[in-house]
Length: 571
Image 1 (cartoon, rainbow, N blue to C red):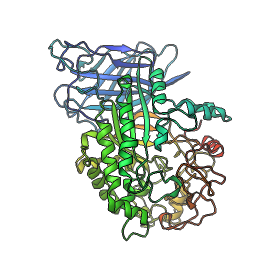
Image 2: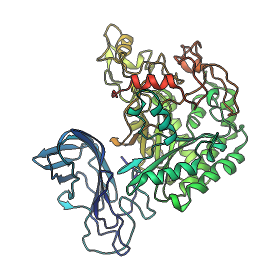
Image 3: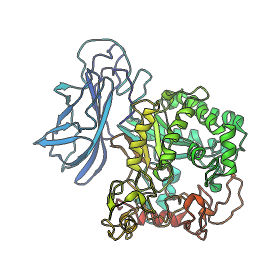
Image 4: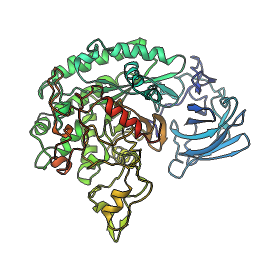
């Protein structure tokens, strides 16, 4: 689900842009917010010789509904072959998309998204007329008034920033990917821009700074909508449990974080020349979860994490960032929410949601500054494990008792993200928040990918034989051997999920395999050493890391080649 706002839409005119999107055009000032009964955003996300993938977002501006059905017709020979998040049927050129049991409720001002694959030949013309329960959408009913633009509240904010939008392709990453043998197959994919130190705001070593990226995003945007993805990542005492990504600011330097890092970023993002962009920020990965899992009397605790829990600077920093950036109408903050192999256990799940709520209300921030959350950032957890579920048992022994699952309640990222979203709403976040899942390195394809369940001789052989995630242990996080590119970025792929994203640019190292002197504040973490035999945080298993890795964030050609070779879906 995308982020829900209560404001009604202004009158819209359906237009077809060069980007393959049917979107709502900006209304005139004298058109009323009550004039449009519903709006439909229809976007062709990917297109190839004989088929395409489309994403559709419906916004209801009439009375609340307990069920719904949207209809449209094609001018050509488009034939829908599969769909998700809606029951889709087709008769000739006429298409009907009806709600599933879990998304029939559609309140006033609320939106719902679904998608599908289709075949075609000739011209893939966009549909021009949509109805919702028999009422024509995107057409003024003449009742008058005044208000904002399509799919927005009065501030101009849309429900799901990814719906109906292209996503910025970082030219620096794209050039590195394209220079690799076979890299042109993915070099046009959108990836996150990492602001991981103060100097990155203006650019380091002659590279692009924040303004340069935003200028490039405006140029890429053209006449359509454009999302640009930023990772805001420089908390004081950063990554208290992982030396490879330690930062430049000491544990007490919250003042520098606010005045030298967040304030300059906010000033740039607020520049009116960037007001047409949808700016998605990933807020401080791997920070708040550490306060839950790596503090106090836990076996996984570190003195550094205890310090950050005691001084409160993670909570203060996240709250300050949410407040400053959330005040900008076209900025969408997504807080990092770890991954299922970190927060999926009962001891971590609810406490993490409560801590996130605390941070979202710190330093002047409110839950309205949070568009959603992102899971699996820069991690490797499989999107969906199809060969076993948490409810399976072998010879009377629950899958939860296997060494791999180890009593976790979740076996993959999508089930975790959807469940965690519900928990976040229950503790006080807005009911329309959406989730992002980083799928940049969780494909786990290639010859090692299981084709079916494991043998039922024991619960461990069953799980280990069938799981896609081939890591030695779910706590392993650094440059994992055998990993592959995951699902390509796409909007609204599943219930509660705003988008699959490649927030971590594939090919950028997680950390160096050996100690490397540097001026970037990055330490050497043994979890990046392939000879390391582990610690409490990974069950004292081998690290599973690739050899000869450079510093975190630096280009790692061998890893990029492996990711392409093991991509799933395959390239």
